[in-house]
Image 1 (cartoon, one colour):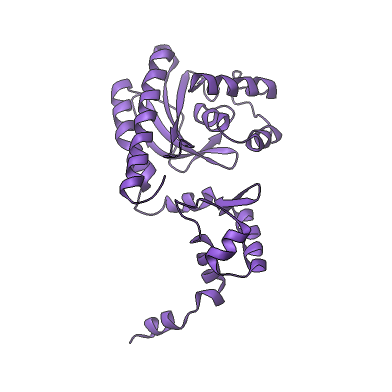
Image 2 (cartoon, rainbow, N blue to C red):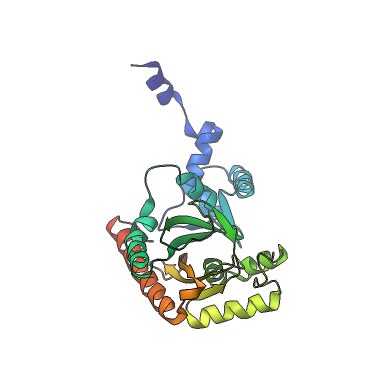
Length: 263
């Protein structure tokens, strides 16, 4: 037996910090994406003071998020996951739809999720439009992007308050910087089913976004399309993005079922 193998056998996961963190994070699953403190104690097998201390530290570093009395995995884990080969169910489900949307429109297509009070790009399909530089795992403000408005419109009041408290930074003369205007815009997003931004992040470009939903109908991401304003037909773009988001949602939910999980 090798020395490395002997070390592996001797390690008690409950007696090391890394082992305890692994037990705690492994308590979450697709069937149990949010857990209370008592549920984490029961599912991890760790003592309550230890779980509470680790949760506090993990929230600080972005590995966990707290919503009321419940905890869920944080976006920081996803950002780290960007560095591995597995692209994940969400991107695998959305990519064919994004390819088709880009082919039909010639625009730039993004798949985004929320990271704190920012938009995090998790996939990008580039078209002919010369859009501002973006990259996978890159970030943008939520208040002035179509994707961000979708995620905000379907987010919690606490999230909206956090964005407002952080200030609505102006990127162009068209950026929304007044809280009441943003609140009105988010209501319009919920009513219309999609969001748009006209030159709020860069002159000469318009974006339209729609929500991608999980099997439980919760919004898990935003699908967006960016094109030059000179050839922007917003109603037509909105219809295309809504169709694409609906298809991506169906593919994502179906992929989760085939993998034996609930998205």
